[in-house]
Amino acid sequence: MSKTVRYTAYRTIVSREITRFMRIWPQTILPPAITMTLYFIIFGNLIGKRIGTMDGFSYMEFIVPGLIMMSVITSSYANVVSSFFSMKFQHSIEEILIAPVPSYIILAGFVTGGVARGLIVGAIVTSIALIFTGLSIDNYFITITVILMTAILFSLAGMINAVFARNFDDISIVPTFVLTPLTYLGGVFYSIKLLPEFWQNVSLINPILHMVNAFRYGVLGQSDLNIGFAFIIIIGFIVALTTATLYLLNKGVGIRN
Image (cartoon, rainbow, N blue to C red; front, side):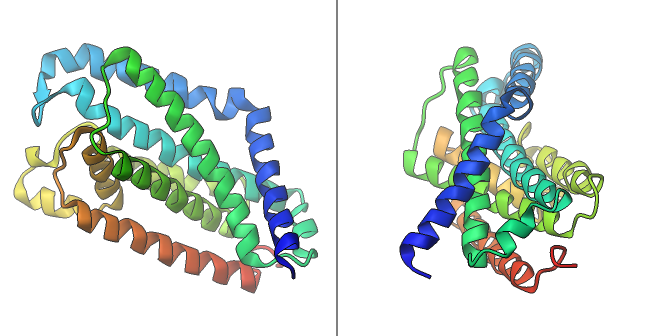
């Protein structure tokens, strides 16, 4: 297959994905913006005044990076899992399977769509954050790199969930019972330095904690964890999930059954 054909296939999938979530923006873009606005008002503005400072920053400034990451994680994951499973459910995935399109092109197209939605929602949440606090970026390279890698990682995770899902209930189990708890326990609303030493060590198992802290370091210049180690964990998960997803697509798991 020529590069032109591969690029055309990739561009078609990406275009379809972006058109899909932009067409139903009241369901895909607006809800995260409203939810994060409520977080800013309730946790940042009202409760934050009573808490005071956290690691040398106002509580509002402290939680902003975590809330941005939360919106990116949920949006990128939800976009891929809902889109790919819908194609399975409607049997339109067969149109892609019979086409001479490599699995890595299919994966890249869906992941790019998930990243696009995650970044758009993240940009909107960031704009909302500017209304409540004077947000400034300490390190643009780390900030952009971390948010991009996180969107890629959870787009891949969404694809794996969609591959194994057999009904619409299956695509809500992981976000509800895995993703949400890990996000809330990922240092979004608190510094792990507040935890007893035992629970600090337990928290290190949570990969989202490393992502939130790496992003917080890029925005605020402060982190509870080692940034280099956080990058290693994120990259490691991306490589592992990419390998696993390509294997599942090549084997036709959950697709050709």
